[in-house]
Each structure stands twice: as C-alpha cells, then as structure tokens.
Image (cartoon, rainbow over all chains, first blue to last red; front, top):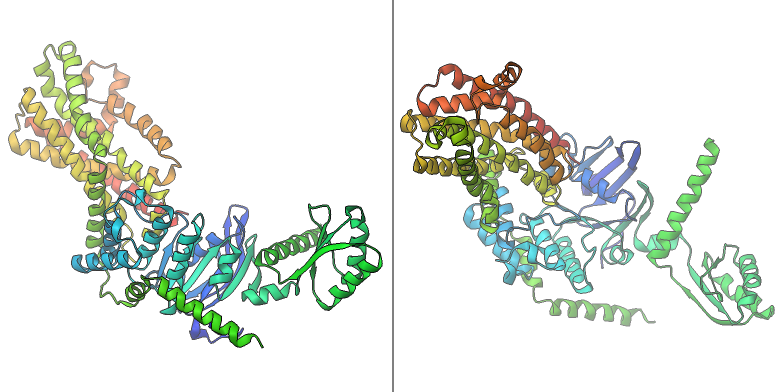
Length: 334
Length: 290
C-alpha cells in the first residue's frame, strides 16, 4: 500500500463518512455506545472486533437499515437521517449473509438489481455479463446461486453491490468462512474498487485482513471504539514488541518471572508451556539487561525472541485494558 | 542499507500480482464503467419484483401446488363426501358448494404470501432491498401482483373443473367474471394480513400455525358448506358477522345471478378495511425491521 498516512485533522469535504456519538440500544443493551468516526474518501476503513462488539450494528445504521437512537452522521455530506434517499443512492451494502436470491441464477440476480436501479433491459443484461466476466463467474452465469461455492457466493454478492459502482461500499465480514484463495480474490476486488475512488468500510474478525486492506482501523469492543489508527500506530501503541522466553528448567519459572518483571517493569504472562514466559515490552533496550540478569541468576534460557506485536496481540491487549478500566469505573460508581 | 532492495522486492511482487490475475483488467473496466440509469419509478420496480417472483416459480414449480392440486382435491372431496348427505345429490350440492369452496381455497392460499415474505426477511437479500434507492412498498406490491396471478389460476382451475362436474352458474359468464373480480380483490386485501404476520412471526412454522388457527374456524364457521338456517341460533349470529360469509354471499350471488348491490358493497368494504389497516402496518413494520 503506497498511500500516505492520514493526518488527524482532515478537510471536511474529504470525508466520506463522518459520525459522532452514534448510539443504538436493543432493549437495555447498548449495542453501539457512542461511536465517533471519520473516514476519508477513497480509503479502506476497518472495523475490528469480536462477535457482538457492535460492528454490524454500526454498519447497518450507516447503511440506513437501522434507525440511530442518538448521535448524527453525514454520508458524503448528506445527513443520514434527513436525506436517507440521497444516502441510499450513493452507498451499497454486502451483508454478512448472502444478499442475493439463492433461487435465481447469478445472471438473473444481477439483471434484477440492475433493473431495480433503473437500467434498461439491454443495459441490465450487458452490465450483468460484464460483471460476471470480471468476477470470474461467467461459467456459473446460468446456475442457481444456491449451487455456488462459498467464494462464488461472496463474489456474486459483491458484484450485486457494484452493479452501479457505489461511492461507499459497506462490507460486513466479507471473507468469513472463505478459503485463502477466495479470500484473496475478495481482497483484489476491494483493492480495485478503492483504486477507482470507492470508499470501503469493512468489518472483520481477522486482524490479518484489517492489516492487509485497511488504511485505518478502529478496534471495537462492547459498542465502543477502544483504539483507532493505522495498523502501525496500533501496534506501536501497545509497546515495541513481545518478548518470548523459554527456560531449560521449568522449576525456575517463578524466579525468572520475578526477575523479568523487575527488569522490564511490566507484567509477565506464564504460558501453558511450563517453561515459557512472555511479556509486552515498551522499551526494547531493557530486554538485553533482563536476559543478562537471568544468566547471572543461573537460569538457562533455551530460546528467546522479540517481535513486533501482531494485531492479535494488539487486540487482546486493548480489550483486556478495556475490561480492567471498566472494572475500575464500576467500582468507583458503587 | 537494505531499504532500496526491499522496495524493489515489493515492486516486483506487485507486478507479479497483476500478471497473475488475468481478470484484473476486466475488473478495473467493470468498476470504472459508468452505467447510464435513471431512478426507476414505483411501477417499474414493482414489476421487476413481480418478474423475480415469476422466475422463482420457474425454479420451484412445486410452489404452484397450492394453486393447482389443492383446489382440485378440495372440490372433489367435499362434493362427493357431503353432496349426498347435505343436499341429496352431488350435482345439487355442487351448485351451492362451488362458490363457497372457491372462496375457502383462495383464502387459504393467500397465507403463502406471508410465508414467502417471512422467508425473504430472514435472508440477507432483504437488507439489500432496503438499502436500495427504490420505492419501498414495491417489494410487497410486486409479490402480491404475482400472487394475484396465482389466485386467478386456482380459481380458473376450480371453475373449469366445476363446469365439467356439472356446475351451471345462472349468472352466466358475466356473473362468474364479477365473482372472480370480487374474489381477487378480497384475496389481495387479505394478503396484507399475512404480510403483516410475516413481518412479526419469527419462523415459517409459527406463521403457518397462526394462519391455520385463524383460517380454519373462519372458513368452516361460515356459509361455505352449509346453509346457516340449519345451525343453532347463536352459531347463526357468528356466521352472519363472519366476513368470509359475506364474501361467499357476494360471490355465490354473482355466480347465480341474484347478487345485490349490498352484497357487493360488503365485500368491497371489508377489503378496504383490511387494506387500510394492514397495508400501512406492514409497511411500518418493514421500515423498522431490524
């Protein structure tokens, strides 16, 4: 990705999506609990979070499918609530489950959508065939979608979303359940769309996917954005890396834990392997001293590694922090 | 410094990538192509939805069973089972029964509208419809249009079979046409009740259950099968206020040429009442569906 990083203060006209204080309640539960969002035009924005974090709810609100309980949002300058029609004509949505008619063929589905969008019969047919070719589905054109493989279903689904190339495309977990090859095909489609100026907002549970595609990532948990930035920024925010250490003698692990904790000034995790320890390190310089200290105490280290944190680690660390701080606020309240 | 070689590597990677993907060009093209289009009006989108429903019949012809086999089965069963006992002869009974059982059959198959809709809602495709810039009721109007075709088919089959079995409408061709028109209007309005329930009920089975619970007593405790004069007085009262009885009276009258303006008005009034209540209710539920 050779796009330059975004600045924090961006020109308002440059924003595809601008939302503030979005809230959605389902009964007592606040599924989305005050989300602010700024998405620049022509970029990919990733929502990363576990099941039930509020990703889908947020996307459904922005795609005009769910009423927002409070907050406001502008989609390409159009107010989400006041100018619903205008918003709908600029966006397209590919939901988590196949949003095409599985009883119909791929060709019929695309013609159907094209006709609904106001294409003439001839145009609709032409467009449908072009899309099927571009998405590698020409051979399945006359097959019912229910007989498609998972990857083909996903592609016809996205094809249906770009019958008229939208300015904003919402993709809800576009690659969940796909094999690596199909996943790459979907990624290629997303990249091609972005290259031509479409803004893509996608949700994913896969850190790898967010890392690969998204210019900026928002980590969502329990209806709130708990971190936001480029994948590099997110990784940097939790320290310079993770240290893994393995000992020769598992009996010495408690002692090693104490030494590392003192030296690195951070909490040390004991892994399920009885000889292994790991820690997030904010300052890589200290690692050498810490390992030296282990050697001086006659604790033999069989191997160690220090790597950039994966987004997995970023995510787990961030959600843990969130739980901690929530526990504290609850204590204060009671 | 390793930076330049790293960049070179990334560069060649990107090149390889585009070489490996033969579809890249057509993908680019299909994305940049501007498709001239203008916003489709409500009629066009409704007809497009109707086209989709017709296509579905092509792939799942079994779904026409309710509009073809059911009517034949019902008509034969009731004519020959009850004919002798109720009217002394099957052909006499047929004159009385056919208009009634026609209403019962059509009314029963209206509930499939709700089932179809309920099926759609639970699939992702509904989200797409709702995020399209189209006249929202067209989804339902299109489906109901095709249903009206199904009702006509069922009614034609029944009347045709009836004629073969000896049904002789005194109202003539015109009377039968008026009866058909009244029946279709009533069936169209009734469909909106099922679309409303289709929005509310969580599963297809639950919807079936509720529909049966409503339709079974409503069609049997009416003048479909027997003359209400033979019933105990309290039951007669129930039968008289039952809208199904009113519709049957209108249609029976039209077919045999003794319909009054009052009978016709009752059918139209009931149809109007149902539409006025349930069409907006369906649309309201449709808009706020999660």
